[in-house]
Length: 328
Ligand code: NAI
Image 1 (tube, rainbow, N blue to C red):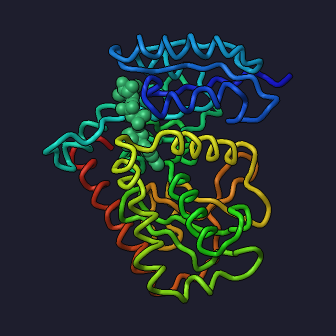
Image 2 (image 1 turned 135 degrees about the vertical axis):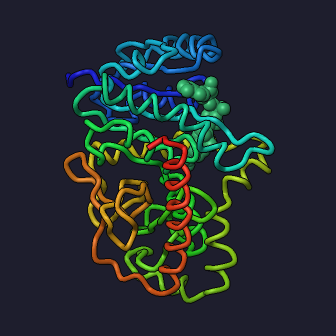
């Protein structure tokens, strides 16, 4: 039997938490031979609901679930954490300006970064799901100076998965036949889903990229505004699909991406593809030996360049705003 892995989940009583915890406990996050100990972190008002979820987890009798503990402060919640899924965040309230939203989330992600720095395990890996995910990851990473920056990532895997399905449907192939798609930039409506290097059943994707009406008026906006479309249809934001994407992200990070393909993740930029160093931006990535690496050498045409730059410009603005607030 492998060693027990401590997985901290924040926002454990929320709707993504409810869709996520059972899958982690069943072994889908790390693999079927890896026992996990869940550490649920909530605000005090969320603790009771988290206790209810923990009762249900107990009632599943998952063989891989080695224990569940519930906390209402980050210092205890991240103690010994090997994997941290930062899901809990402050949603945008009516009339809130972007700077208010960034400030409110800074109040969550700065202390969480500090706590991770102080008490998490040496091999800690952090996935930020709570929005604005890229900049929340930047805040957490900036406040954890002793943790290597490449241990922090922001989730754009849901956007990636959404794009895979749109392409598969359009091309009439199975989702598994679509490879080498990329989400660039911010997890927001400015994100750029890039098909230009994609392979569809082993063939180039030019049939789709040459259909410029479909590409610009359907594919890109459908992927980029899918979150709002889900809210409009369901009356609530994506939860099960977000949880699924978090599982995919961490599974690939730990176990490696498949040969002949890549995925998308928000990671700290090393300056690749003209993305300013230090920004948490989505890139085409592979995971080898437990670390994300940016896929290098892709040719970026004018169409893509413009869109990558627009999304990265938004990240630059967000970084300036959190700097001005003293959060990083
Ligand atoms: P929710 O409102 O159902 O749950 C959030 C939970 O976080 C609540 O239980 C709340 O008590 C808790 N929480 C708030 N502050 C906390 C703190 N400081 N420490 C610990 N827990 C805290 O929200 P839901 O639907 O679960 O979504 C969570 C976040 O994920 C949102 O920010 C949402 O925008 C984001 N999201 C991100 C996606 C992505 O692709 N990156 C996709 C879908 C959602």
